[in-house]
Length: 317
Image (cartoon, rainbow, N blue to C red; front, side, top):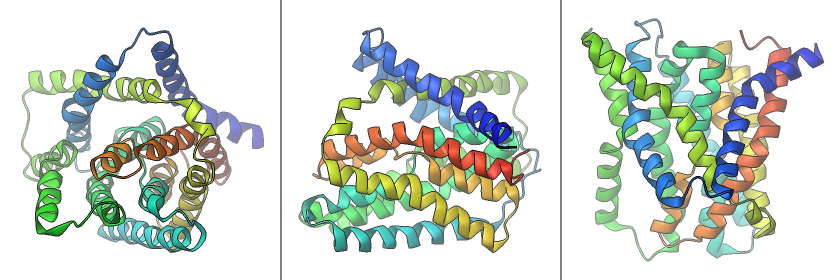
């Protein structure tokens, strides 16, 4: 049973790990350059990933029921974890200037790329459709919480900053794609076959391209710097978040699909957007990059272990 569970876990994490390593390798040999990675990342975020989320919901054929209790639980659990890491950081880390970056790195998961890749590998379209709804709500929450924890790094947020935050959330391509998918599915709007097929071509390139770009942006030399701050945030992200949130969902009595989805979403490494947010708000962007690199490398091990445990408990099909 142990070896079977271990084999299953590597069948899930292996393709993702290989694509990340391939992206890292191609960047190191200069086959990929910064300009390509930047443009490809924008293509994923603004076009192909919203298309993937839109089609996943549209193709679910109303087979996925949105459990509002589940969504509410996910939001409340993430808020509770945010408060937990905030309290722990202020209590244990003396470097107050970096508190916001450490906190953001500890709670903000890469749900839209790494998390979705895991879900797609295990559950297919039905899992991705449910995950898309979760990603929509959690993306909004992450942006709000990130502003809250990073605001001390600049003078004052104010009403102008709050208005800018709300506009950025409303213009987020991922949220737009998800909401359009929900509207089309609810109103039973049929897309022409030619558009569906074209959209599927875009959707199919999303995860491979996104993972290659993620691997290309990794800087493993960063693992040696910012010692205590990086590892403090990484332990919360890779160990405490999936254990506490997934364990709470299991005790609450959610279905195996819902518990498994929460695990993948919370066990995913720190989101690349945390670097952009930290830099935009005048915080320590280098520390944010270090946390992303550490959690991305470490998540391969922690996700494999978590998947092995859940598989041994018959949580996966």
